[in-house]
Image (cartoon, rainbow, N blue to C red; front, side, top):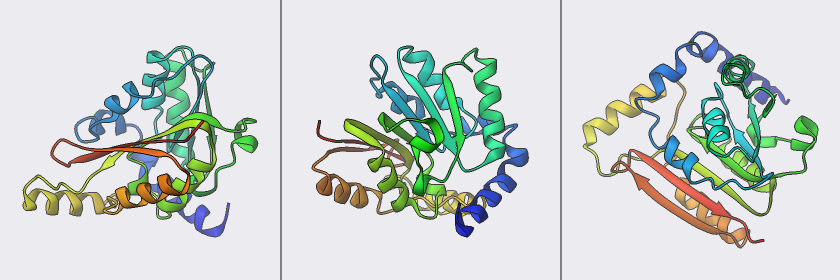
Length: 219
């Protein structure tokens, strides 16, 4: 890792060293849209699936249960979170199906981490808002997709149909956890879709509380 990547890894370990123990219990109330994203992954036989920023492994466990024919991989920059992810897989009886590796989302090498050339599905759940180089993370994800593969994203929106006071309070609270909702996410994805001749589906959820996107590469 570069110096910047090491610094971000250390920051995430500091943030989550204690929080990881209560993360899933507390985040269920405001990380909205995750299960809708998982339901739309449409994972087929032997499809390889990567979660970028897998955290506690909650989403991978849910996806592996819903799609038993897929092969699942998770990466995270925080070694502390990966401790929880591996424990979650073991508790769910899925340790043999879920593979984990530490890495930086902006320059992830699946061949080095998992001996895999790429993936049919990559998903990112409330991850881009925590990655300083989030545009580079998108570029990296696209480069690790196989032809015909899909990138699925859910993250904080701009609260565009919610009261201004709610947006102000939420953004201040999120900033305390180093979370920055990406106002120009749709524009960035539109540019990527155009550059890769891909299709893009983008929808606000819960009056703009969250945004969901699917970018599909041509076969």
